[in-house]
Image (tube, rainbow, N blue to C red; front, side, top):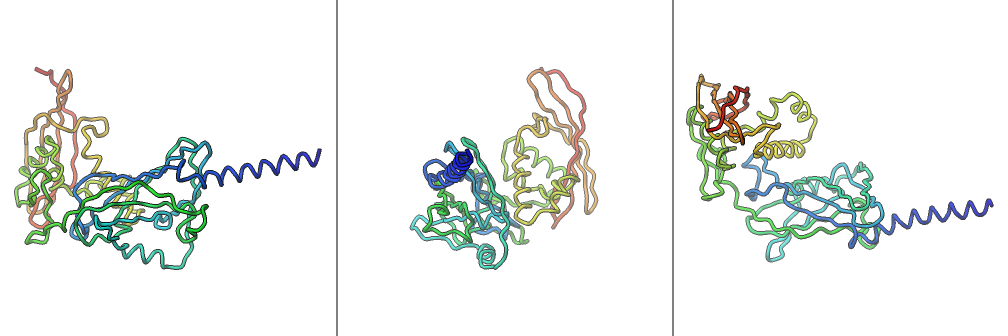
Length: 334
């Protein structure tokens, strides 16, 4: 009986180990690795002039096998993920300086073990600029690799630690952004390709410009006079979280906030006004407020809200840094 129990126990251990190995060995066919651009927009060769313009990549690993799939994911994803980007003539773009420094330093790599159950997926976001130095405009093909046993320990001769290879992704980069005579980067209009230049217009015209762009979903124009970081940090909870993040994580948080502002519904409220009217404008040399009555047409009624926009003067330009809103009732639709 004792021998039988031992035999059963040994068999279970072997099966358990085999199922883990099987999941690794059949990765190419049953564990799917996909990448896609998280935020499709105009990208430029360098980000320095734009004070940080990340190219976010959504990484998704899907387990199509009948077994749980386990792999190590480094806290610093540079030790789990690699990226290969090539021109249309198959020239490989160089790695970023920060990536080279990370991988050449001697130190402990912290990681956690991720388990993806059968028919489930695991996703996260990475910035391509953390991996690749974009030094020329053009069209490129992107492919990524996930190393289940971390890059530092990866042995490409062993099937247990060979990387999982993603699909190919195409990306286009324009030349570096044009900088105006005052050093401020010029935004580009997607529709015309022309430079969008901030103008030294008064606060009420800034707000009118922003709301009109919002009504027409012209995002380059909509964000031209917004200080996203200042608006984000006006929320106490968001500010506390922001201060605990590193630079790359802060860029992701700001990008997520930017994306949320493009929604037609924010916090359960419609944010695309049917009509609006500037009621009051007050400002001095440095700060200003603009009060606007906005109407939002619903299926059976129109909601009226009062918005107050807070602006600061930065480099001769009035910039929106915060806003507040309060309900003013409803009216029947015509």
